[in-house]
Image (cartoon, rainbow, N blue to C red; front, side, top):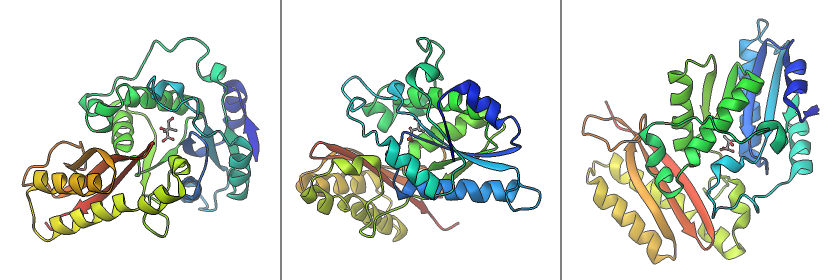
Length: 289
Ligand code: PAF
């Protein structure tokens, strides 16, 4: 496995690769990320003429992107575990870790920004102004550096997936987007780099977020349609257990707007604080045709 820090070196190395699978990350890798690298490998193999991955290459980027953190967020304290991350990538059979320095990514102040449409201002975007602009900008830059055939993202960051998938479509980027299911711990907690911030007691409580979303899904599938009342019910239940919910929202899955009765593909999204840690999660719901 190679570790590359500059764009010039990366471009030179990737010149001969015809099929590139790409997993962008901010490091602090867990089994959810490793799962994405396996999916990337499978996609590369599927694209290669002999289906054996000949000529294919899996790239993982590790870059903590200042642009997507708000002034009061955890950019400074975000866990940086580079040695551990590269070991995990090596063990997972990744070919290249691309870890650009801040100067390689932002050699000058980034004045050209990707401004996603209204989706960037709702849900997580309402709580984290500028976050999705920062994500879309760095991902477009990474796409231009790596020029992947396939890019794999985890659906735990559902809104991010929608923003980026729409960006790829609207800007005609020749990239196949693969949105992978969330990997969960045995008790249901969605794997996340921020789970490491939880105290032992909070870690025991944390799966309750998924449990509440699963109950809400069950209620929708049982025919309940008063989404506002159900959202308020989950927020109150979490609140009573000491959480501080930012939002619980039933939305349609393609654009995250409020569903009409005709919409069949829904997603329940949630963000809530448990102590000092902000957790997000979501559950997709498909209604019978
Ligand atoms: O999901 C993440 O880890 C980040 O938002 C991403 C996509 C790597 C952009 O910095």
